[in-house]
Length: 213
Ligand SMILES: NC(=O)c1ccc[n+]([C@@H]2O[C@H](COP(=O)([O-])OP(=O)(O)OC[C@H]3O[C@@H](n4cnc5c(N)ncnc54)[C@H](OP(=O)(O)O)[C@@H]3O)[C@@H](O)[C@H]2O)c1
Image 1 (tube, rainbow, N blue to C red):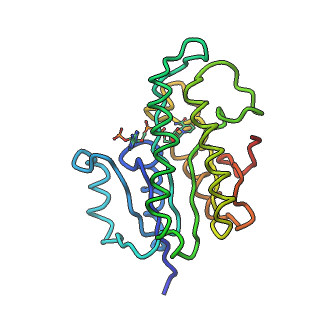
Image 2 (cartoon, helix red, strand yellow):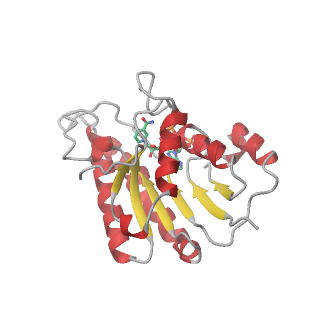
């Protein structure tokens, strides 16, 4: 029998999360738990589930993908951003992944792959030097990077990593984004499937290259 792996993905009703579900359904090895905050409105996701042959089980979670995220402040800057926008962005982009991982860590630890992936962005990398814009978003992703480092250090038996999916054509990425969502997600999943335990605590882009902090 083919080895099966359980994936848990937040923000699966649109954008990067929905494309991950579509690509993972191509392989019979994958069982997907797709999380959406309003499942009744997630019509495309429901359609996929109806045709997925019941590949929905919860034994352990091999891959927990903290994908849900927001960019509420647009191109705001350190001197123009609203602190309530920063706080709301922080709650979703840092508090969300922290709480989801706390809630499901028991199921991750029961699995074979024991992998947690936090979807970040290179704009949260200080060394990548992206300049003044998108301050509230970048600050939240820099904090997510530190959260990931802390999770990896606390649980060395897990593989906890960060991934930047590239600048993708989704609601968040906007109309000027350079890549179709299928390309970025294909690269993200390829990188995740090639992970080794020693990769824990690191930051990759969708081409599988390391991103500096
Ligand atoms: N697109 C890019 O260019 C790009 C680049 C780098 C990193 N990223 C990261 O990739 C991830 C996904 O982005 P995307 O481009 O797919 O964005 P998107 O198309 O705007 O989709 C965002 C997803 O996150 C969910 N979400 C937002 N706030 C939530 C909350 N408070 N609780 C639960 N779910 C929530 C949304 O659910 P609703 O539909 O219910 O709002 C939706 O499913 C984010 O972490 C983002 O920062 C994206």
